[in-house]
Amino acid sequence: MSFPVTRLRRMRQSEPLRALVRETRLVPTNFIYPLFVCPGAGIRKEISSMPGVFNISVDEAVKEAREAKSLGLGGIILFGLPEKKDETATGAWAEDGIVQRATRAIKKEVPELVVIGDVCLCEYMSHGHCGVVQKKAGGADYEILNDPTLEILAKTAISQAQAGMDIIAPSDMMDGRVAAIRKALDQAGFINTPILSYAAKFASGFYGPFREAADSAPQFGDRRGYQMDGANLREAMREIALDIEEGADMIMVKPAMPYLDVIAEARRRFDLPLAAYQVSGEYAMLQAAIKNGWLDRDRVILESLTSIRRAGAQIILTYFAKDAARLLS
Ligand code: PBG
Image 1: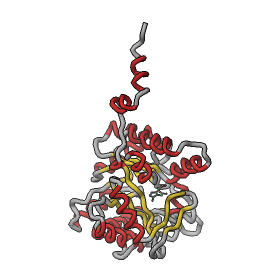
Image 2 (image 1 turned 120 degrees about the vertical axis):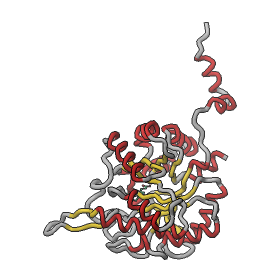
Image 3 (image 1 turned 45 degrees about the vertical axis):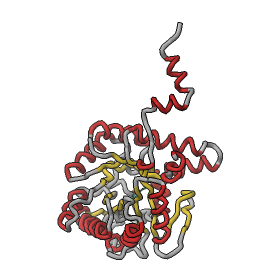
Image 4 (image 1 turned 180 degrees about the vertical axis):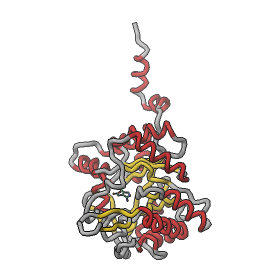
């Protein structure tokens, strides 16, 4: 007496048969590699909570871009560490801002590589919040001013597009930002520059190491006023639907691994290209265990990325992008 399941088990014992029936495949074009660009030259400063990830100067960023291209990655996303921060995020939209400079240099040397610009103000604001802050009269309390923030975000998007950015990715979670950026880009003539919206971005403990990498920890308060409550799946779908109505061309869920159900539901409901961000804390957690010899590096890199792909994201922002591409080749 034999059971049908026996054949499935036999098939699993042979890699050629496993490959034949594999439902989810990873390719290097799935991956977007984040870069943290800082002023100076010849700089590569490792981020202590993210082994293998560095603050790099523009010249080093060009080298990384070349490597990303030769590994066949889907692209890179740029974050900036400006010379100085202020309360109007000047460094975010200045023509010679750090991200604008890096974009021009990369586009000149590696024009075919897709370059995505993270549009947010937290790295450029002295207080580390993603928007314009107004202190409430008398108290230590404060509020984020939505509409003045939109104007700065729109200026930032235009200056990035002028520098040659291929895709604009607003990550701030202000209301109406996708519409404001779309309108501004269109008016400036960038009608063909797509928007990848961080549409469902949860207030998360897993962003901890990023705030060291981008030097963007809020100096007071936290981001729960504008990022989403991790308990809310239906609200996430509403946020995504709104961003699509406002003109988003691609949507993102962030973080990835703790929100695989959100990715899967977004895949079922919406037909736009779907991205997910395996964030700094997900990377740090895996790296810490790998360093201790507690987890098998190659297996967990590919398994974690496969799970995100299987949930439905075809674009994965990950600090493992280069490692994963090498493992796949
Ligand atoms: C900017 C931004 C953050 C991340 C991406 N864009 C930080 C935050 O929202 O607090 C996090 C990425 C990561 O943790 O790897 N707003």
